[in-house]
Length: 134
Image 1 (cartoon, helix red, strand yellow):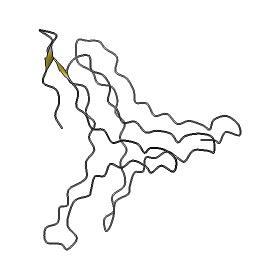
Image 2 (cartoon, helix red, strand yellow):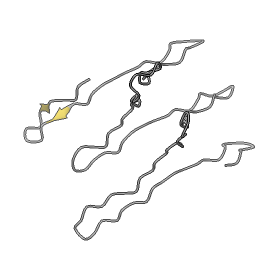
Image 3 (tube, helix red, strand yellow):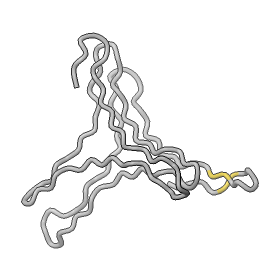
Image 4 (cartoon, rainbow, N blue to C red):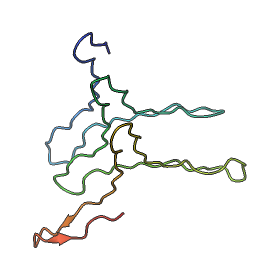
């Protein structure tokens, strides 16, 4: 993708195919999968998802991981997890860590880490039902 000499640089958009309704059968849209390569003798590849630093007069970009809204049934899940360690008896065991960190601030408050679960609604009464848990 090319650089922008003035204005904005080029964009990359990945879209999977959509399934057209019909025939009374359920259909699913296409998927997008990013997978690194395996190493037969050492470490597999890594995926880095990041935005770059801002220019002198802007803010850095954001990253959003969201699932879509569901018309019927539960909406999609967002899962962040580390892999398991599978070799018993080695000296370097243990699974990976999961870290949530906000950036430091040179001038002003730092960001927050917020974990929240949604509210449930009872469709029969319109009142609240059990929400999610943390």
